[in-house]
Image 1: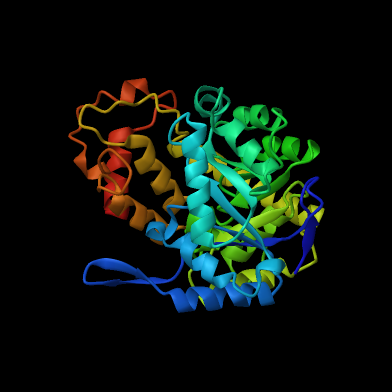
Image 2: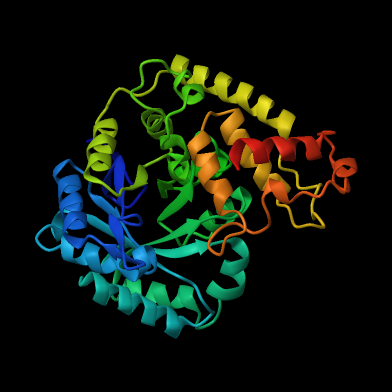
Length: 373
């Protein structure tokens, strides 16, 4: 296992982190039941293979993740750093402490190594967190008391706002998204690293998108065992990245990811250049179909045009067809993205004059429905 300096925390972190958000489960009588024994075996095997960072959260796995991780920690607590999160539900410091105390109970540990303010952006930080008697004041006090060892934040906002949060000086690490298909945080990641923060990446294989077989992805670097290997090695090639976090749901994933993270031969400059060229070519092709500018919206019939076209690009440009079809099926479902599928288009034509790319939107919606529906 490779290890990297985790910012200025004084810790060395494994290049692979165990994400406990997709623990193995099965459906029994319509309910999701998590396999606690197998989950514990997976965590223990990951630690045997050198993983020393485990990430969980209060709501993962229907609230079971922290409890299962806590049981897995028995006997190995001194070998791992534990990360969990505080969902900022209001501006009350007292309520933030109640959530912290609940996590400590569920994990059954005395202190959390890396405690994240969960999924915050600049607006949340200024309006709910950095307030008198608010969550920031409360968790900093909890840190003084030894309940938290390092304060962190996880992030889904605009990259420029990540830079602002880094520059507050309150945080020691950040958890954010970065992968082959989404490099928008690249500059902010470099800034965080320069400022001494540890950087953990969520979604290194694009939430599973890049884990699917894809000739378009694999041809970027012939010789890679899988698209997932290329995706993971691309993330770890970024020297501003401390750790790539993978949500693992099987022992096979633990073994495969650990093997990739154990590869100490970094991608060469030529290999990274080839990836850059291939991704630029794919981006140009994708932009011919849709740049995601949203000028076509809103659709009077609620068709989510940009999302439909984004999924079509995964299929047509990147060869990620299975993922595209599965996500297309979820559009409009209770637990899926808002809006309607491409086949709901009634051909009113209001969208096409708004498109700066002059895309034949109606025609492409029909193609999307035929390919993914």
